[in-house]
Length: 212
Image (cartoon, rainbow, N blue to C red):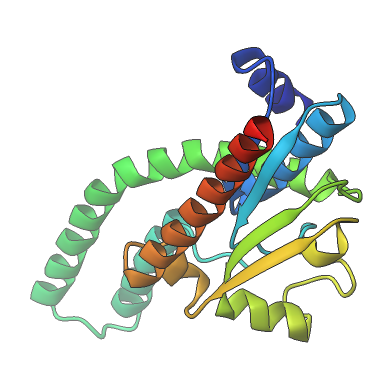
């Protein structure tokens, strides 16, 4: 993640900095803040939008498009071997499979490209060990993740975001699930509203400090 911190400094050589991220981007923003702070830069806002655990926890993933296609083909073979299907239904099922395969070919290629990127992110996250941050962490989060953290469900016990700062920890809980908060519904609008409020306050405080 050193590359990202250098990139930020390249585009904006001097602070103050206002940083934010969501999902995997939360860990990226957190580490960038760490490195900029160590370099003597001023971080006026570190806002993490509904992150999961600070460290990687292995989870089961949904079935890929590959497994869906293979499973569909397997069902065709089983049905044919057991003579469950009539000649007409056999033909129709094969036609459906061909159509399904054509429609998912593009999705398979797109998923393959995303998979490469995801694996790089997952490797970086698995090897990442967050240290104490010398500043305030602002965390708008879903009530789903807030409850899970309290129950250590999908979170490493004792390694929560609130324990990763020696300064203030400001948490804004938004009622809803992680998907709702990061989706396009009212919970997402509430998340954006919270983020804008935090950003406006940080900028106003900075302006007041320079005028007083």
